[in-house]
Length: 110
Length: 114
Image 1 (cartoon, each protein chain N blue to C red):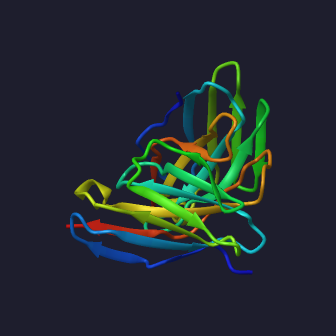
Image 2: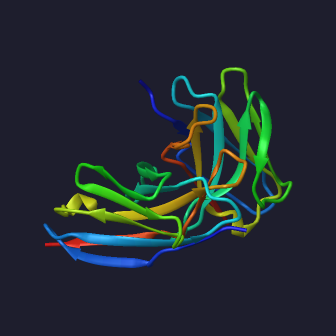
């Protein structure tokens, strides 16, 4: 089976940096993805790590350590619009669908 | 370029009824997946359609069924609705098998079962 663990809630100040962690247990590993979902909106793809290390996309970065079964999403220069839920996800073994974590609700405060 | 579209946006049904939700994938995408998202939870995989066939299925009962049409659009049918079926139903499209497996989601159909 698969399991993903993320903190349920995180609060951070506008302009600051926040890190959202994700630990996983999978029967086969095919990369770690991150999705953002605003209230009432569709989940949207943010980042993907297939290999160990850091991937950077603008203000967002994602890190993976396969030996530790651990990854994180780093959001820099936080803006109010970053208030949303963030999900880590892994691919189901041998399949083309995603298994999602329960999500981290990020609240950015002034 | 139209993204993933779903209809209807909201739906209210009573227990025991049947419901059909519809999805049009992003232009050029051939694979459609359906997810159920309960309040405060992550999306949970229901099933995936490719070439008009169900290719993978999550841990959902047979009351949940689907279909994919030649134009790649898809329907999700739920029979004998239960109160616990109340959720946001998300459709996601993708193109074949790719390493990143990026799923493009629609805004969902909010189903309320009374």
